[in-house]
Length: 165
Image (cartoon, rainbow, N blue to C red; front, side, top):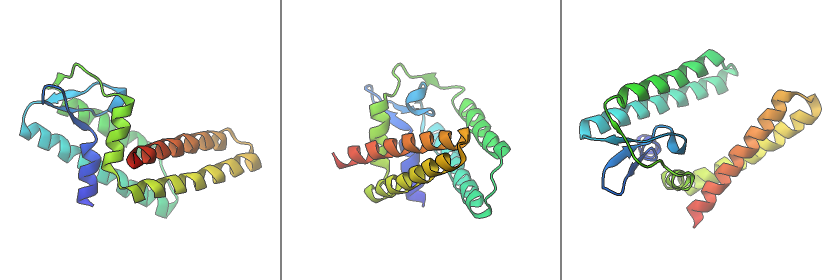
């Protein structure tokens, strides 16, 4: 589990052209921050690992209890935002943003082929279920769920394709 968390955290870091370590908390959607020392890097990696563990535990609880609260999701997002803001407050922004292709390649490197294949298979199942639910309930929410699962499965399929290249 620790190795998996380290691989997930690693995808948020990249060494730039000047050999500096850059932390991209928002992946290709935001700017990166130049990590200046090992203590800062360790703090960021620890925060990311604890955050991921918390997310995994909450998802497991949601799956077992069949109860998800939107305030919990909001609190998780707020925790990430405030944690990133605190950890990067003294860091210099990187000149270059991470590209979508770099981000997807990094995800492909951080995950095993079997995990990606399982994600695509589960995604296809969720797509089929959400489409079936949409046609039986005609709800906007089930339609949005179908679109979400289609996009997520396509993204996982693309990352699997990159892993196979």
